[in-house]
Amino acid sequence: MNDVLALTCDLIARPSVTPEDAGCQQLIAERLNTAGFNCEHLRLGEVNNLWATHGSGAPVLVLLGHTDVVPTGPVEAWSSDPFKPEVRDGVLYGRGAADMKGSVAAFVVAAEQFVAAHPNHPGTLAVLLTSDEEGDAIDGVRHVAKLFVERGQGIDWCITGEPSSTATLGDLLRVGRRGSLSAKLRIKGVQGHVAYPEKARNPIHLAAPALAELTARHWDDGYESFPSTSLQISNINGGTGANNVIPGELQVMFNLRYNPHWNAEKLEAEIGALLDRHGLDYTLDWHRSGEPFYTPEGRLRSVAREVLAGFAGAAPEESTGGGTSDARFIAPLGAQCIEVGPVNASIHQVDENVRVADLQALPDLYRKLIEKLLD
Image: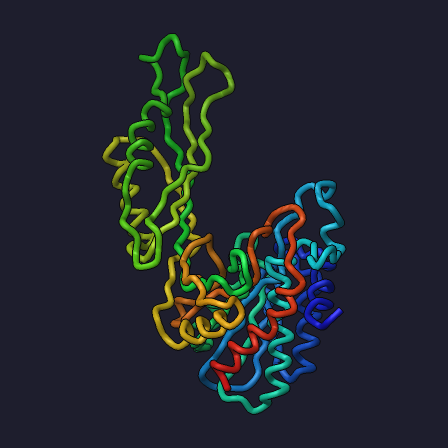
């Protein structure tokens, strides 16, 4: 068992279901300390964060990852214990294998190798890890980024190890992400008997035209490599459970994934104005998960394109698709951000896995990126 496989297995064996870290960051800090990194543990709320640096000054290159994982779901549905890593037919199984303990282990090995070969490298190589990426993402990188602003800590380039590849390691380079904005809408009516609708106000009926307009709206035509902005209703709840009672309130939850044509403030204003036009009595609670970010053509993208083409055998697709990542909190600091990691086919699923060959290749991929940017 080589170094990156052994470390990945050690991390998987620690049940770090968000926001727990289960000792992952302490293990990593011990290794990075030995390699000559300065390690700072940032305990914020119930969340562990690790900031490890080697070298000084600019440029600052950050390897960004998370040690927390999503819950396993029914353990009996797994082919093997999700927290007992197991290799079968050249594939490593376990919760976090792909998302993203494999990448975190590869970061560590690549960083160790790089500083051993280049102890006096220019600039700063940093590793930033959190245990709050899969959960609320409040006291993780979002909070750390605020501390960086207060400290004046600059970041030039950020490589996030999220599983970005689709079929072959290195076949996709993530160069941005859409923003995410969620809402809980409560529409008030007057409860009553269905036989006497004149004595009641049905919030479902009142809301239907507004919701129809909201879901039918064409928000934009996309932005460069970003798809069009999308609004999806995820939950609707109203009624008492009886078929002869007009409900007094309707609750609707929805989410927008949006490109740089918009920001959260503009979207909130647009939707509030729409609801007002329909004369609804409502309350609306917003949660801003993060604004969109985009890394234009520049040194980070060109270096990543060159390195990934060497691993995948062809130039990678350059994409802004998918959900969100913690890079959304680093990009506003002025950093160029990309995401490079293993195949994402099994993430968050039962029997999450990563090909051992891909895992063993990851440290070399990350090391080549580091060398071209800092050496």
